[in-house]
Length: 140
Image (tube, rainbow, N blue to C red; front, side, top):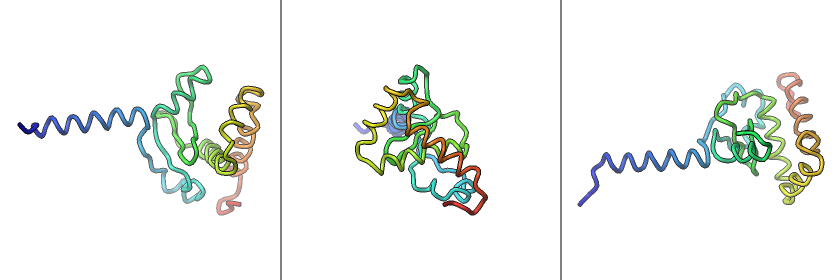
């Protein structure tokens, strides 16, 4: 006996909802933002999902605004695509790519210096602030 098409469709939709809740939904950045900051195209972007929740739990919150794991950046569902936040997270992509031990070093920095004092966070904040304050067309 074959399943009715409605059941199959509902099952697929359910699986997609569960997957979205876990890994988030792929997102595309506004073209004007990528035109202004072309380096943002180097990362994969997702909305929602478990990573932003787990990051929040580690900080005693329900969620964080964003979290980066290797080349993928997750934004919380309700967070605007502010250039400073996106560039900050992109800097973490660079940090992941620069050193295979980065995740361990990042955690150690957080444990010993706290989130705000973590040198990787300080670097990401500085990078984002410099890029946002540069003149358009200058992406050095």
